[in-house]
Length: 251
Image (tube, rainbow, N blue to C red):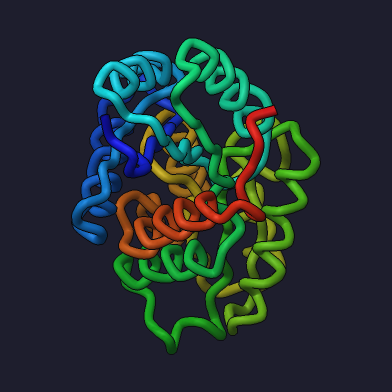
């Protein structure tokens, strides 16, 4: 029997094998950052293992304390409905196991730092800020709260010196990535970079990339992936979930 909390990272999942590979690379970075912490990975769809499979296995091994962390950037449908439901169902089978739910990753200054890292890796330097407009390209959502969060992140990021920062969405909302790039060009922005605000590759990130290329963006940054800042943020959300006043109920 183990009394030490286990971190269960819950990713969306994708048929694209790059998705699971990126998620596993991120969780491995988390393990390296905190030796001794057991980190497990589960997926909502398309990939194995599923959340119930991992919870059942942990229970069989005698684990009694689990912190479930949604690998999501906003509080949209998956965070509000899918993950709480699957955790309630899984926890109901194991009365002796405590399952706490950590908050989603965003918004956070660490995510902005990870975006900046990816832009530097794509070739942008400090001197490019005044002449470069950024398209903050997220997966998109029909949830107004999630859309408002992305818009606020863009506004805050603009204050760091980029000549413009515009939100864009790969699904469910407008503008699309290519529309946002063209809008910046029409306003006279000399250089445009697309910064995908997504964790791992897959169908929607590929749509973001196609939009960036079709509209002639000068720079396309990589997904956030296993950026060190993202790993640090996972550990921060894990630690917050262990504090009673910040822990989220499953209900």
